[in-house]
Image (cartoon, rainbow, N blue to C red; front, side, top):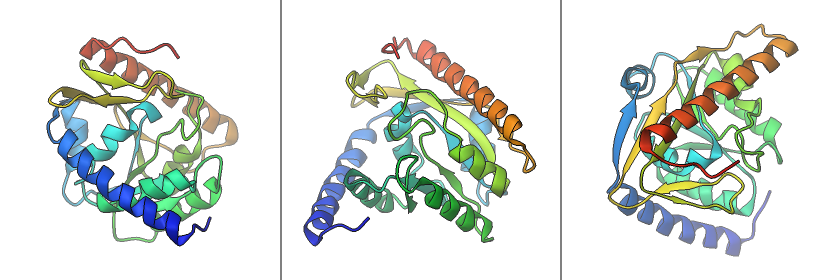
Length: 233
């Protein structure tokens, strides 16, 4: 989708200030990691030996987007909407390689672009997008990033975050959460799951439902650890 010069300028200006605000705000937040070994082996490791698809629900996306800002080569899919233009501007400021598309607009082309970039050789990417986004329903997994993992040999790693002092947006479809300044966030990583390249349709459906269950379990577990009472789905 093309935008006017005015729209692009507005998105760039807003992106600059949101990036600045995020750096100032989230820099005050302390982080605890559950399953540190998964994080160290598959996310933090220098010279990552394989692609990684880091999968979370949309409600966690803002803080995780910030958290992964310094971890090597990162690839992210962002919608083609006007709001997505601003988000893409922010992502580039944080060093992400951006492909544009979503399940509701240009998704198949964006997924193909991600796969092409990852299969081009050389770099090993950490990539992902919220797997129930951009419009929900919340905590129901879409197949796109599982397909990316299947076609690129990436490990699929479910993850979630929560905290004891959160701002929750109860009217948002995903019940977005943000940590309050000077609070603590806990990030939990599940065990990596390889996605075989020769999966049939039925097997793909089965593994998607299993991964959905794992991600919901991780979300409930980290909420319990933090004493956060989740807003009802």
